[in-house]
Image (cartoon, rainbow, N blue to C red; front, side, top):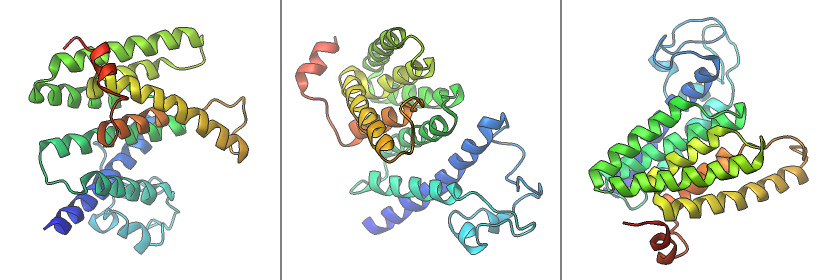
Length: 251
């Protein structure tokens, strides 16, 4: 039975990844993610069921539109596979329940935010609104509503201070993202994720510089490191200890 659940998680991740990939393509162009239906950007022909099967369609048709033959970007299947593997990892040893659903929901929003910020260096309010809505529903259902609001306030204020200190070195979207993450993580775990993201960002910048993938003067998107650290803390990691949680939380 466990293997059936894992297969279900993986396939669900592929489907979600396909939708997130569509969002990552349309949002920067200012297009609706609901209409028109999926179509080839080159010839405009609406895609059928055979064209929309995650992974299989891309590989079966050789990464081309089967009508006009135009090449499709490799990131389509890569993003689908990435979310599929992500859901598989998050679901290991877990039975389907509301907690797992919210975990998948949180991870999906973080993945989309990371992709968009990495490519566009912009954090979209509509994605943050999706995470905010899910976080509020989760907080209400778990009875942690006030703790969640306190976490959003603490992380938002901390990042706002950093934003002012940076004097244009970072975007205000990072402040809003931190507030939303605080809603999901709480104050203690949120601060721990913020600390880990700073370390990860420094390490990532150093690696990219050594590999000559990015110059020292080229801005490095921060949201991917922040989202990755937030997911790690939310799922696998804990804060440095109960003292930090007690110190920053009045609840």
